[in-house]
Length: 97
Image (cartoon, rainbow, N blue to C red; front, top):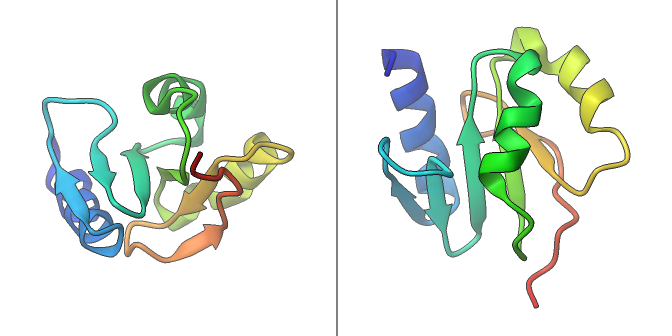
């Protein structure tokens, strides 16, 4: 994996109080949610499949330059959006069961 991807995944793991495992999907699993790190908004369908339909907050993590398109693609979905610095740009509305 590329260095920016790994760096972003580690920051998100810290925020979600979890672990980053590059060999598993989703990339980050934590006590406060899970996240899949991607480089392009075109990869959102793949990220949603990797996040699965489980309970609890879920986020797609993308670089800031992809957020406008990502917001459009995630509109009406319960999945949230984060940037590469682990800042939440769209809150996940998925709830724990």
